[in-house]
Image (cartoon, rainbow over all chains, first blue to last red; front, side, top):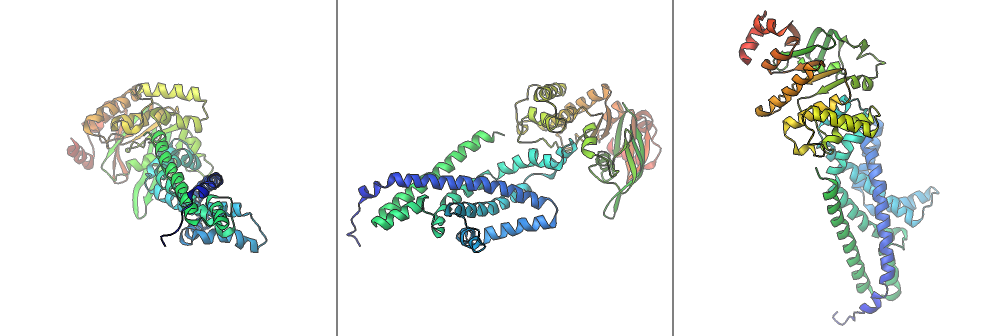
Length: 221
Length: 240
């Protein structure tokens, strides 16, 4: 057990490739958040619409996203849809899977945030002649996003970590995929995954810290 | 002109307006007094169509508010309303608060909206708070901002729903001064209020609501000087 020979130099040679993988991971995470937030806003509107059908669609989405494993969601996008003849690349499957998950969690966060915004805000906007959509767009939504900013940051961190689940759909260009490939060839398992862990840690820390700085700039009120 | 004809309105089993008839002429200042639950605030939210009515009708310059084809968003541009809660939009600066609806509802260009906002904010004495967020303002300042926000839409009518009721006593005066200013400028106003002294000073007529009925309406000297009904005498004695 104690005579394992660490070979950091060899593992560190792979660093450039791993950093490229880290960029792919970050890209997938950012895109999945952009898509996830957009869909979550739409799901929130569905829930506010008063239409039974639209609310049911939104609730179903939220329930599945939050109560099944993310791994299962990504797997279903790739192999489940594959069964219907819809064949998506590993990259797209991973992206859609994570975006699906993000949208569900964020829609629930938005619902909570809306409870913190008094009904009188909408009333004031409407009495100034705004349509319901304008009142949401210009008065309610900015406040909703502000209240949800911290949960959104958490979800972003989750999205980064979830990219590692791409392994179930044979994704091999992200940080986890690259590391896993290198490991299969060199068997420097401990070194490689330790480096990957450090990179993951640095990315998520950077994201949380910049989010905090951004919040301080954006939300001065 | 605002014409209210036999308006009835219930919340569930509770009838809050039991057939109100009232006409407010252009340039008139009408104040509405009465105990809580007398229906006076509900009447205001019915006038700008925020609340539906059960029967009767309300006409604003001949447009029936609750008719099927009426464009309420368009109608509300002509009727400003200010509520008891200040309802400042917390994520926007004072200036942006007053500009938002001008830009999005009236489609005014930015420079024009800004000039109008600055004018109205100066008008209510907030010319030095343009870049401040509402969270930094006192209640009285927030309420004056809400008044400027409504005025910036160039309304023909202003409705004030107990605008001083949520304020600390020392801040009531500055808001009432703003209302007095508007009245002196000839704005058509309906003010629901508990400030009897204010009602006596600025009103052309005062209406007394009691349990969903407009029990009395008269010029202030007459209404306060020689109240006819027992309810009004009781109400005045209690608020004096």
